[in-house]
Image 1 (cartoon, rainbow, N blue to C red):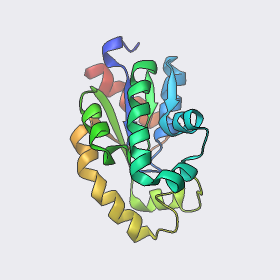
Image 2: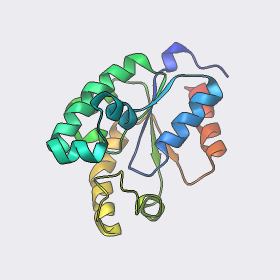
Image 3: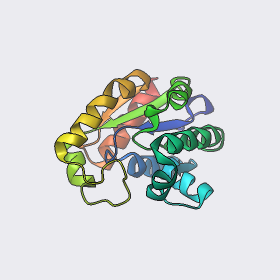
Image 4: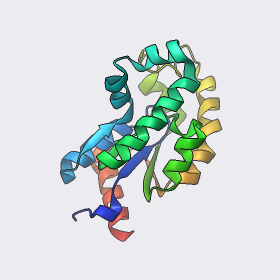
Length: 172
């Protein structure tokens, strides 16, 4: 199945550690589509790491940059993996509501915790207990759900996740 222009861009949302970048890159390679990880794009454009941006301008400042670059990426790339907190900014949330194929990757808090607990590149996970991560996750769930075209369990293999997404897109 070839994806058509009406099905693009495909944007992955979800909490940190749910596999957005991995699945986004896999999908883009399989379908020969352009791909960008929004956090990586921000780091390139700002010439700073995400933790350094958080340190210098705070989360609110980062979310404003994230919105600015999300707008740019939507018109440039076929597949976009966002950061877990992209839905924290009302402008980003409203922009994502206008996109048809927003895919929410989700998995258990135990899996999330295991995947990110020692990742120094995640400022919102730094020094957080599993319970604190769970509370942050729970504070975001309704917004992920509000804008998602589909929700996919990312506990499965990459191929199973990919197949689920492609089957859903071909029906939509």
